[in-house]
Every structure is written in structure tokens, then in C-alpha cells.
Length: 153
Image (tube, rainbow, N blue to C red; front, side, top):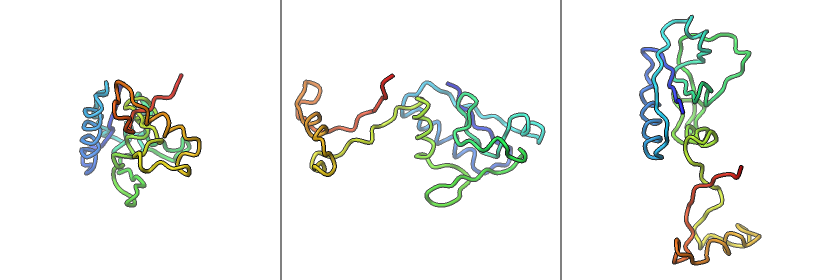
């Protein structure tokens, strides 16, 4: 898996993105390397379809795509709409979601909770209560655990 951070010299935030990516990939033991790609001229920006620095790509695909009809590509800073407002780099959570969609890092099921939090409202079918509370050799106490979710197929 090829993960690239495209940037221009002088970008104040590309190192933060690089650190976030490397840390996440190391923690998840993902088989991907982070490569820094310097974009130094407007001609390179046009050729690489560079929407601004930093840009994160996986196998050539932007994690945060911009419309193809964009007026122009050039050297400049890129802004990301984060929960804290516009920032020069995405949050770790923002980066993790599209990486999980591309199977670079494992996804996590949305269907988990502490056993005491499960109720008929939270789990109307009783599936989680029944399946997660059964004792097994791998889970002798039957406690609910947060486990990676891998979609079938």
C-alpha cells in the first residue's frame, strides 16, 4: 500500500500529518509506508492535481477528494473542516476513517458498548446481549469487548 503526503516547502502542517500517519500505521501494524512528495512548482501542482498542502493519497487516491472541475491547482495551503473549525491538517479521526474504508487499518464495528449500557432500546433484537454475554474459551467471563469489524466479501 502506497501512502503519500504531498506538500510544498514552507508548509507549516505537513510534518504534523506525516507524524499522525506514521503513528497510526505503526500502532495498527499496517503494511504501508509513508512517502513525502515535494511539489515545488505550479507545473508540478497541475500535473499531480495538487489541491494544496498537505494532501494525503493512498495508491494515488486523495483521502479527501476535491471536485474534478476545480479551477486550478497550484502551490498553496490546504484547509480541512475539522470539528474544531478550519485547520491546516485533518484530525487523526478524520484520517483513520478513510484509511479503514480502504482497508489500510482495521475498521471498528459501531455496535459495541459496555454490558451495563445494553438495553432493549440500545439493542431491540437482543442480539448483542445474547451473543456477547456467552462464555467461550476466548472470552471466559462473557464480557463485551470492542472488536475489529471486517465486512464480509
